[in-house]
Image 1 (cartoon, rainbow, N blue to C red):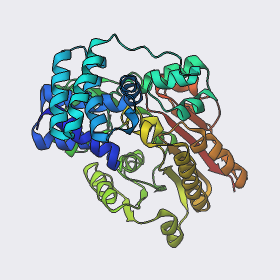
Image 2 (tube, rainbow, N blue to C red):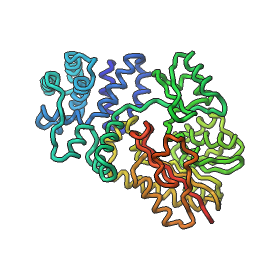
Image 3 (cartoon, one colour):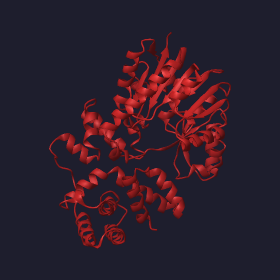
Image 4 (cartoon, rainbow, N blue to C red):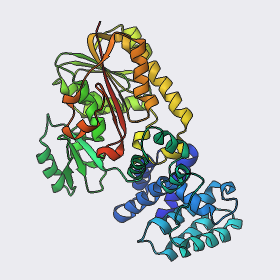
Length: 444
Protein backbone atom coordinates (compact mmCIF):
# COMPACT_ATOMS: atom_id res chain seq x y z
CA UNK A 1 0.00 0.00 0.00
CA UNK A 2 1.49 3.32 -1.08
CA UNK A 3 0.81 6.56 0.76
CA UNK A 4 -1.37 7.92 -2.03
CA UNK A 5 -3.32 4.66 -2.26
CA UNK A 6 -4.01 4.84 1.47
CA UNK A 7 -5.14 8.45 1.10
CA UNK A 8 -7.60 7.24 -1.54
CA UNK A 9 -8.96 4.52 0.75
CA UNK A 10 -9.32 6.86 3.73
CA UNK A 11 -11.05 9.58 1.69
CA UNK A 12 -13.55 7.05 0.43
CA UNK A 13 -14.42 5.97 3.95
CA UNK A 14 -14.66 9.54 5.22
CA UNK A 15 -16.85 10.81 2.39
CA UNK A 16 -19.00 7.69 1.99
CA UNK A 17 -19.32 6.23 5.47
CA UNK A 18 -18.97 9.26 7.70
CA UNK A 19 -15.81 8.02 9.40
CA UNK A 20 -13.52 10.53 11.14
CA UNK A 21 -10.39 11.33 9.13
CA UNK A 22 -8.00 11.77 12.06
CA UNK A 23 -9.06 8.53 13.68
CA UNK A 24 -8.60 6.62 10.42
CA UNK A 25 -5.26 8.28 9.77
CA UNK A 26 -3.93 7.21 13.16
CA UNK A 27 -5.20 3.65 12.80
CA UNK A 28 -4.05 3.11 9.23
CA UNK A 29 -0.64 4.73 9.70
CA UNK A 30 0.08 2.21 12.44
CA UNK A 31 -1.39 -0.66 10.45
CA UNK A 32 0.85 -0.02 7.43
CA UNK A 33 3.87 1.15 9.39
CA UNK A 34 4.03 4.68 7.97
CA UNK A 35 6.41 6.87 9.95
CA UNK A 36 8.34 10.11 9.54
CA UNK A 37 7.97 11.74 6.15
CA UNK A 38 5.53 9.13 4.85
CA UNK A 39 3.26 9.67 7.85
CA UNK A 40 3.42 13.46 7.44
CA UNK A 41 2.70 13.12 3.69
CA UNK A 42 -0.32 10.92 4.45
CA UNK A 43 -1.74 13.50 6.87
CA UNK A 44 -1.00 16.45 4.59
CA UNK A 45 -2.76 15.09 1.51
CA UNK A 46 -5.76 13.56 3.30
CA UNK A 47 -6.60 16.57 5.43
CA UNK A 48 -5.56 18.97 2.65
CA UNK A 49 -8.07 17.46 0.22
CA UNK A 50 -10.82 17.61 2.85
CA UNK A 51 -9.85 21.15 3.81
CA UNK A 52 -9.93 22.44 0.21
CA UNK A 53 -12.53 20.10 -1.26
CA UNK A 54 -14.83 22.85 -2.53
CA UNK A 55 -11.98 24.74 -4.17
CA UNK A 56 -10.60 21.57 -5.77
CA UNK A 57 -13.99 20.64 -7.15
CA UNK A 58 -14.34 24.13 -8.64
CA UNK A 59 -10.94 23.79 -10.35
CA UNK A 60 -11.71 20.34 -11.71
CA UNK A 61 -15.19 21.40 -12.86
CA UNK A 62 -13.56 24.04 -15.05
CA UNK A 63 -11.78 21.25 -16.95
CA UNK A 64 -14.50 18.59 -17.04
CA UNK A 65 -18.03 19.08 -18.25
CA UNK A 66 -20.28 16.99 -16.04
CA UNK A 67 -17.69 16.66 -13.28
CA UNK A 68 -20.40 16.40 -10.62
CA UNK A 69 -21.74 13.23 -12.24
CA UNK A 70 -18.43 11.37 -12.12
CA UNK A 71 -18.17 8.35 -9.77
CA UNK A 72 -16.75 9.19 -6.35
CA UNK A 73 -13.63 7.08 -6.93
CA UNK A 74 -12.77 9.10 -10.05
CA UNK A 75 -13.34 12.41 -8.30
CA UNK A 76 -11.18 11.33 -5.36
CA UNK A 77 -8.29 10.34 -7.63
CA UNK A 78 -8.53 13.75 -9.33
CA UNK A 79 -8.81 15.57 -5.99
CA UNK A 80 -5.75 13.84 -4.54
CA UNK A 81 -3.60 14.73 -7.53
CA UNK A 82 -5.03 18.23 -7.99
CA UNK A 83 -4.29 19.03 -4.35
CA UNK A 84 -0.64 18.14 -4.86
CA UNK A 85 -0.46 20.17 -8.07
CA UNK A 86 -2.11 23.29 -6.65
CA UNK A 87 -1.13 23.34 -2.97
CA UNK A 88 2.10 21.32 -2.61
CA UNK A 89 5.14 23.01 -4.14
CA UNK A 90 7.48 20.21 -3.10
CA UNK A 91 5.71 17.59 -5.23
CA UNK A 92 6.97 17.65 -8.85
CA UNK A 93 4.02 18.06 -11.25
CA UNK A 94 5.06 15.02 -13.32
CA UNK A 95 5.04 12.90 -10.16
CA UNK A 96 1.57 14.05 -9.10
CA UNK A 97 0.19 13.33 -12.58
CA UNK A 98 1.93 9.96 -12.93
CA UNK A 99 0.86 8.77 -9.49
CA UNK A 100 -2.68 9.95 -10.17
CA UNK A 101 -2.85 7.87 -13.34
CA UNK A 102 -1.58 4.85 -11.38
CA UNK A 103 -4.35 5.34 -8.84
CA UNK A 104 -6.91 5.56 -11.64
CA UNK A 105 -5.68 2.32 -13.18
CA UNK A 106 -5.92 0.59 -9.81
CA UNK A 107 -9.27 1.93 -8.59
CA UNK A 108 -11.25 3.30 -11.56
CA UNK A 109 -12.96 1.78 -14.57
CA UNK A 110 -10.77 1.73 -17.73
CA UNK A 111 -12.91 4.33 -19.52
CA UNK A 112 -11.74 6.95 -17.01
CA UNK A 113 -7.99 6.33 -17.26
CA UNK A 114 -7.48 8.65 -20.23
CA UNK A 115 -9.73 11.31 -18.72
CA UNK A 116 -7.72 11.39 -15.49
CA UNK A 117 -4.46 11.71 -17.41
CA UNK A 118 -5.75 14.50 -19.65
CA UNK A 119 -7.34 16.55 -16.87
CA UNK A 120 -4.36 16.32 -14.56
CA UNK A 121 -2.05 17.45 -17.33
CA UNK A 122 -4.27 20.49 -17.86
CA UNK A 123 -4.20 21.31 -14.15
CA UNK A 124 -0.43 20.83 -14.06
CA UNK A 125 0.12 23.05 -17.06
CA UNK A 126 -2.02 25.95 -15.93
CA UNK A 127 -1.38 28.87 -13.66
CA UNK A 128 -2.70 28.85 -10.12
CA UNK A 129 -6.41 29.23 -10.81
CA UNK A 130 -7.81 32.38 -9.27
CA UNK A 131 -11.49 32.37 -8.32
CA UNK A 132 -13.38 34.96 -10.30
CA UNK A 133 -16.85 36.21 -9.44
CA UNK A 134 -19.36 33.42 -8.86
CA UNK A 135 -22.38 35.72 -8.89
CA UNK A 136 -21.92 37.34 -5.49
CA UNK A 137 -19.06 38.17 -3.16
CA UNK A 138 -20.23 35.47 -0.70
CA UNK A 139 -20.32 32.84 -3.44
CA UNK A 140 -16.82 33.84 -4.51
CA UNK A 141 -15.59 33.65 -0.92
CA UNK A 142 -17.29 30.28 -0.49
CA UNK A 143 -15.33 28.83 -3.41
CA UNK A 144 -12.04 30.64 -2.74
CA UNK A 145 -11.89 29.55 0.91
CA UNK A 146 -13.64 26.21 0.46
CA UNK A 147 -16.59 26.65 2.83
CA UNK A 148 -20.22 25.77 2.03
CA UNK A 149 -22.28 28.79 1.02
CA UNK A 150 -24.87 28.29 3.78
CA UNK A 151 -22.07 28.47 6.35
CA UNK A 152 -20.58 31.62 4.84
CA UNK A 153 -24.00 33.31 4.73
CA UNK A 154 -24.64 32.48 8.37
CA UNK A 155 -21.35 33.99 9.49
CA UNK A 156 -21.82 37.08 7.34
CA UNK A 157 -25.14 37.74 9.04
CA UNK A 158 -23.32 38.26 12.35
CA UNK A 159 -19.88 39.62 11.36
CA UNK A 160 -18.22 41.93 8.87
CA UNK A 161 -16.51 40.78 5.67
CA UNK A 162 -13.00 41.30 7.06
CA UNK A 163 -13.74 39.14 10.10
CA UNK A 164 -15.41 36.55 7.90
CA UNK A 165 -12.22 36.31 5.84
CA UNK A 166 -10.15 35.94 9.02
CA UNK A 167 -12.40 33.11 10.21
CA UNK A 168 -12.28 31.28 6.88
CA UNK A 169 -8.47 31.56 6.77
CA UNK A 170 -8.21 30.31 10.35
CA UNK A 171 -10.42 27.32 9.59
CA UNK A 172 -8.08 26.37 6.73
CA UNK A 173 -5.03 26.45 9.00
CA UNK A 174 -4.15 23.21 10.82
CA UNK A 175 -4.72 23.49 14.57
CA UNK A 176 -1.76 23.16 16.95
CA UNK A 177 -1.52 19.89 18.86
CA UNK A 178 -2.08 20.95 22.46
CA UNK A 179 -2.06 18.92 25.66
CA UNK A 180 -3.51 19.63 29.09
CA UNK A 181 -1.00 18.99 31.87
CA UNK A 182 -2.23 17.96 35.33
CA UNK A 183 -0.27 20.60 37.20
CA UNK A 184 -1.54 19.27 40.54
CA UNK A 185 0.69 16.27 39.93
CA UNK A 186 3.58 17.47 37.78
CA UNK A 187 5.35 20.75 37.01
CA UNK A 188 5.00 21.83 33.38
CA UNK A 189 8.70 22.66 32.97
CA UNK A 190 9.71 19.29 34.40
CA UNK A 191 7.29 17.47 32.08
CA UNK A 192 8.60 19.34 29.04
CA UNK A 193 12.15 18.31 29.95
CA UNK A 194 11.05 14.69 30.20
CA UNK A 195 9.38 14.90 26.80
CA UNK A 196 12.45 16.52 25.26
CA UNK A 197 14.63 13.72 26.63
CA UNK A 198 12.29 11.32 24.80
CA UNK A 199 12.72 13.28 21.55
CA UNK A 200 9.44 15.22 21.77
CA UNK A 201 9.78 18.99 21.47
CA UNK A 202 7.12 21.25 22.97
CA UNK A 203 6.50 24.84 23.99
CA UNK A 204 4.35 26.52 26.64
CA UNK A 205 1.00 27.85 25.51
CA UNK A 206 0.92 31.62 25.15
CA UNK A 207 -1.69 32.24 27.87
CA UNK A 208 -2.78 28.91 29.40
CA UNK A 209 -0.36 27.80 32.12
CA UNK A 210 -1.49 24.16 32.11
CA UNK A 211 -1.40 23.72 28.31
CA UNK A 212 1.64 22.83 26.21
CA UNK A 213 1.91 22.69 22.42
CA UNK A 214 3.61 19.67 20.88
CA UNK A 215 5.99 20.50 18.02
CA UNK A 216 7.19 16.97 17.17
CA UNK A 217 4.80 14.57 15.41
CA UNK A 218 4.14 11.87 17.99
CA UNK A 219 1.55 9.32 19.04
CA UNK A 220 1.14 10.41 22.65
CA UNK A 221 -0.57 7.15 23.61
CA UNK A 222 2.91 5.62 23.34
CA UNK A 223 4.32 8.00 25.96
CA UNK A 224 4.55 6.88 29.61
CA UNK A 225 3.38 10.32 30.75
CA UNK A 226 0.07 9.72 28.99
CA UNK A 227 -0.50 6.41 30.76
CA UNK A 228 0.46 8.01 34.07
CA UNK A 229 -2.34 10.52 33.59
CA UNK A 230 -0.02 13.51 33.45
CA UNK A 231 -1.24 14.81 30.10
CA UNK A 232 -4.18 14.52 27.74
CA UNK A 233 -5.01 16.03 24.32
CA UNK A 234 -7.21 19.08 24.81
CA UNK A 235 -7.74 22.41 23.10
CA UNK A 236 -7.14 25.48 25.30
CA UNK A 237 -10.78 26.56 24.92
CA UNK A 238 -12.01 23.18 26.13
CA UNK A 239 -9.69 23.35 29.13
CA UNK A 240 -11.49 26.51 30.31
CA UNK A 241 -14.79 24.75 30.98
CA UNK A 242 -13.95 23.20 34.38
CA UNK A 243 -12.13 26.37 35.41
CA UNK A 244 -15.39 28.25 34.83
CA UNK A 245 -17.38 25.54 36.64
CA UNK A 246 -15.00 26.03 39.61
CA UNK A 247 -16.02 23.03 41.76
CA UNK A 248 -15.11 23.20 45.46
CA UNK A 249 -13.92 20.63 48.01
CA UNK A 250 -16.67 18.25 49.09
CA UNK A 251 -19.23 19.23 46.46
CA UNK A 252 -21.33 16.89 44.35
CA UNK A 253 -20.89 17.47 40.62
CA UNK A 254 -22.79 16.05 37.65
CA UNK A 255 -20.86 15.61 34.40
CA UNK A 256 -23.81 15.01 32.10
CA UNK A 257 -22.15 13.95 28.83
CA UNK A 258 -18.80 12.88 30.16
CA UNK A 259 -16.81 10.89 27.57
CA UNK A 260 -13.93 10.91 26.84
CA UNK A 261 -13.58 11.90 30.50
CA UNK A 262 -10.91 14.57 30.60
CA UNK A 263 -13.32 17.14 32.11
CA UNK A 264 -14.42 14.53 34.64
CA UNK A 265 -10.79 14.13 35.68
CA UNK A 266 -10.29 17.89 35.79
CA UNK A 267 -13.39 18.34 37.98
CA UNK A 268 -12.23 15.65 40.43
CA UNK A 269 -8.76 17.19 40.71
CA UNK A 270 -10.22 20.71 41.04
CA UNK A 271 -11.87 19.42 44.23
CA UNK A 272 -8.61 17.87 45.35
CA UNK A 273 -10.15 14.43 44.80
CA UNK A 274 -12.31 15.20 47.86
CA UNK A 275 -15.73 15.46 46.28
CA UNK A 276 -18.11 13.37 44.22
CA UNK A 277 -18.47 13.42 40.44
CA UNK A 278 -21.34 11.53 38.83
CA UNK A 279 -20.32 11.05 35.19
CA UNK A 280 -22.89 9.86 32.66
CA UNK A 281 -22.28 8.54 29.15
CA UNK A 282 -24.89 7.01 26.87
CA UNK A 283 -22.63 5.22 24.34
CA UNK A 284 -21.06 1.94 25.56
CA UNK A 285 -17.74 2.33 23.71
CA UNK A 286 -17.33 5.90 24.89
CA UNK A 287 -18.33 4.79 28.39
CA UNK A 288 -15.35 2.43 28.39
CA UNK A 289 -13.17 5.34 27.30
CA UNK A 290 -14.58 7.45 30.14
CA UNK A 291 -13.70 4.82 32.74
CA UNK A 292 -10.23 4.35 31.28
CA UNK A 293 -9.56 8.11 31.32
CA UNK A 294 -10.69 8.43 34.94
CA UNK A 295 -8.53 5.50 36.00
CA UNK A 296 -5.51 6.75 34.09
CA UNK A 297 -6.05 10.30 35.36
CA UNK A 298 -6.14 9.27 39.01
CA UNK A 299 -9.64 10.73 39.53
CA UNK A 300 -11.16 9.70 42.87
CA UNK A 301 -14.76 9.97 43.99
CA UNK A 302 -16.05 9.42 40.46
CA UNK A 303 -19.14 7.32 39.76
CA UNK A 304 -19.31 6.40 36.07
CA UNK A 305 -22.84 5.65 34.87
CA UNK A 306 -23.84 4.11 31.53
CA UNK A 307 -27.15 5.30 30.10
CA UNK A 308 -29.29 8.31 29.28
CA UNK A 309 -28.48 11.08 31.77
CA UNK A 310 -32.03 12.45 31.50
CA UNK A 311 -33.54 9.21 32.76
CA UNK A 312 -30.64 8.41 35.08
CA UNK A 313 -30.74 11.64 37.06
CA UNK A 314 -34.52 11.32 37.38
CA UNK A 315 -34.14 7.85 38.90
CA UNK A 316 -31.33 9.01 41.20
CA UNK A 317 -33.44 11.88 42.49
CA UNK A 318 -30.29 13.78 43.46
CA UNK A 319 -29.60 17.49 43.61
CA UNK A 320 -26.16 18.69 42.54
CA UNK A 321 -24.00 21.59 43.63
CA UNK A 322 -22.64 21.93 40.12
CA UNK A 323 -23.68 20.56 36.76
CA UNK A 324 -21.46 20.43 33.70
CA UNK A 325 -23.20 19.94 30.38
CA UNK A 326 -20.56 19.73 27.65
CA UNK A 327 -23.26 18.90 25.16
CA UNK A 328 -23.23 16.98 21.86
CA UNK A 329 -23.06 19.58 19.12
CA UNK A 330 -22.31 20.27 15.46
CA UNK A 331 -18.56 20.56 16.30
CA UNK A 332 -18.26 23.45 13.85
CA UNK A 333 -15.67 25.05 16.09
CA UNK A 334 -13.29 22.18 15.33
CA UNK A 335 -13.13 22.51 11.54
CA UNK A 336 -9.36 23.10 11.72
CA UNK A 337 -8.99 19.58 13.15
CA UNK A 338 -11.86 17.93 11.29
CA UNK A 339 -12.21 19.64 7.90
CA UNK A 340 -14.66 16.96 6.70
CA UNK A 341 -17.28 18.63 8.92
CA UNK A 342 -17.57 21.44 6.37
CA UNK A 343 -19.02 18.99 3.86
CA UNK A 344 -20.85 16.74 6.34
CA UNK A 345 -22.92 19.28 8.27
CA UNK A 346 -25.92 21.30 7.07
CA UNK A 347 -28.30 23.87 8.50
CA UNK A 348 -30.78 21.19 9.54
CA UNK A 349 -28.08 19.53 11.65
CA UNK A 350 -27.62 22.69 13.71
CA UNK A 351 -31.36 22.84 14.39
CA UNK A 352 -31.40 19.17 15.39
CA UNK A 353 -28.46 19.58 17.75
CA UNK A 354 -30.04 22.67 19.32
CA UNK A 355 -33.22 20.69 20.04
CA UNK A 356 -31.19 17.92 21.66
CA UNK A 357 -29.20 20.45 23.72
CA UNK A 358 -32.39 22.17 24.89
CA UNK A 359 -33.85 18.81 25.91
CA UNK A 360 -30.78 18.05 27.99
CA UNK A 361 -30.85 21.45 29.70
CA UNK A 362 -34.57 21.20 30.47
CA UNK A 363 -34.05 17.78 32.05
CA UNK A 364 -31.02 18.83 34.12
CA UNK A 365 -31.96 22.26 35.48
CA UNK A 366 -34.44 20.80 38.03
CA UNK A 367 -31.58 18.73 39.51
CA UNK A 368 -29.57 21.85 40.38
CA UNK A 369 -29.50 22.71 44.08
CA UNK A 370 -30.56 26.21 45.16
CA UNK A 371 -27.44 28.35 44.83
CA UNK A 372 -25.93 25.72 42.56
CA UNK A 373 -24.13 26.44 39.30
CA UNK A 374 -24.58 24.97 35.81
CA UNK A 375 -21.98 25.42 33.07
CA UNK A 376 -23.10 24.73 29.52
CA UNK A 377 -20.50 24.37 26.77
CA UNK A 378 -20.29 23.30 23.13
CA UNK A 379 -17.41 23.27 20.65
CA UNK A 380 -19.50 25.32 18.25
CA UNK A 381 -19.82 29.11 17.96
CA UNK A 382 -23.21 28.89 16.25
CA UNK A 383 -25.77 31.04 18.14
CA UNK A 384 -28.52 28.42 17.78
CA UNK A 385 -26.38 26.11 19.91
CA UNK A 386 -25.14 28.89 22.17
CA UNK A 387 -26.44 32.33 23.07
CA UNK A 388 -29.91 31.94 21.54
CA UNK A 389 -30.36 28.58 23.27
CA UNK A 390 -29.34 29.96 26.69
CA UNK A 391 -31.62 32.99 26.28
CA UNK A 392 -34.50 30.58 25.72
CA UNK A 393 -33.60 28.60 28.85
CA UNK A 394 -33.42 31.79 30.95
CA UNK A 395 -36.89 32.70 29.69
CA UNK A 396 -38.24 29.29 30.69
CA UNK A 397 -36.64 29.26 34.15
CA UNK A 398 -36.88 32.73 35.76
CA UNK A 399 -35.03 31.42 38.84
CA UNK A 400 -31.85 31.05 36.77
CA UNK A 401 -29.37 33.89 36.38
CA UNK A 402 -26.15 34.39 34.45
CA UNK A 403 -22.96 34.40 36.52
CA UNK A 404 -19.96 36.57 35.74
CA UNK A 405 -16.81 34.49 35.16
CA UNK A 406 -14.36 37.08 33.90
CA UNK A 407 -12.09 36.34 36.87
CA UNK A 408 -11.80 32.73 35.74
CA UNK A 409 -10.49 33.71 32.30
CA UNK A 410 -6.89 34.51 31.27
CA UNK A 411 -6.41 38.16 30.34
CA UNK A 412 -5.91 37.26 26.67
CA UNK A 413 -9.62 36.36 26.49
CA UNK A 414 -11.00 39.42 28.28
CA UNK A 415 -11.47 41.40 25.03
CA UNK A 416 -13.83 38.69 23.78
CA UNK A 417 -15.90 38.44 26.96
CA UNK A 418 -18.63 40.81 25.82
CA UNK A 419 -21.57 39.72 27.99
CA UNK A 420 -21.61 38.58 31.61
CA UNK A 421 -21.96 34.83 31.89
CA UNK A 422 -21.52 34.15 28.16
CA UNK A 423 -18.39 33.58 26.06
CA UNK A 424 -18.17 32.80 22.35
CA UNK A 425 -14.76 32.06 20.85
CA UNK A 426 -13.79 31.74 17.19
CA UNK A 427 -10.52 30.23 15.87
CA UNK A 428 -9.35 33.59 14.51
CA UNK A 429 -9.47 35.26 17.95
CA UNK A 430 -6.53 33.71 19.80
CA UNK A 431 -6.00 30.41 18.00
CA UNK A 432 -8.37 28.21 20.02
CA UNK A 433 -11.16 26.04 18.69
CA UNK A 434 -14.53 27.72 18.26
CA UNK A 435 -16.42 27.38 21.53
CA UNK A 436 -19.39 28.67 23.52
CA UNK A 437 -19.68 28.67 27.32
CA UNK A 438 -22.37 29.91 29.68
CA UNK A 439 -22.49 29.91 33.49
CA UNK A 440 -25.88 29.87 35.21
CA UNK A 441 -26.90 29.90 38.88
CA UNK A 442 -30.13 28.79 40.49
CA UNK A 443 -31.36 31.55 42.82
CA UNK A 444 -34.20 29.63 44.50
